[in-house]
Length: 200
Length: 210
Image (cartoon, each protein chain N blue to C red):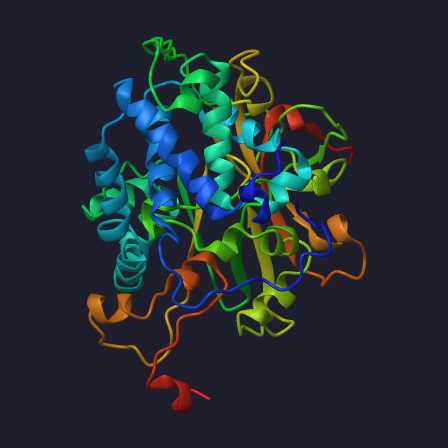
């Protein structure tokens, strides 16, 4: 939601408790345990949150989004059924999750630190980690990391595409226009296939 | 026929969410995927062992030991692990340094990525639509709401953590803290300083430093 208007002041809560209700901590633990058991991974989880109807997404609290995403994924994968969820009783045993292969290659970055790059102007219907406010913009590579799995395919279980990730710096003026303070910048972590070498 | 007395409440009262969470937990327990003890342990870990005190120790050490500071900026995960604090593996962590001419702050506009291993669970405001939408577009206005007014000559660098790298800010050591112990220094370093929405202040220096 980078750049959106209308959300008002930042709601700072002094002396905020770690959890606002005990169920929040339970949901946190359930997400961690089921994810580490290999029942789903983080890209799928994020995409499941993004698949909530937009109005519901905005209304829901953080941990309500988590609960919704865990329910969605476990239902879709047949770990639990609607009938079981309604009754609160297990009918069938949970299937065994597939093991993730250890296929991470070494880092071979295409772009150099200091190089100018342009982000693709692309609007995929599914999951992506290229923020909307930074599409079709020119920036400079600050550092290279990874490789990490490309979320765009991994979230949909459509491939395990390892890519370098670059911290790319964009001037505030490039993103927000000339009224932005000179010298201010936003750095965004971007996968290699989000980027093109910028024309000189 | 759907008009029973439950419909007098809001469409999603907290009790409904709580009931959903409890139903999911009991179901997963029956399936042997999780135990109540495991859940209790996770909650206790975040209540007791993982929190901003870890990041504060790291910052204090970096202020006192220039070689440690260099290691922290080069390979943060290894530098944090060196101190033997914190429970989970740190993961891919990047520490970014504030200086006299640059101030860094961290946000995740796409969800709420946050360096849990060194700061614990994020505060609600960090996960709010207001912070996520505005931190990249008008960081100086956001900082003002936190009581931090930055002069124009200080550049603001916002880090939108959109990948599985996690970012933590290494704030500047306040003047007037010469000779302080690691413990005394760590006490100055709040969670907000390491997110980059505040700066550490030495209590005695506020009047004298001018």
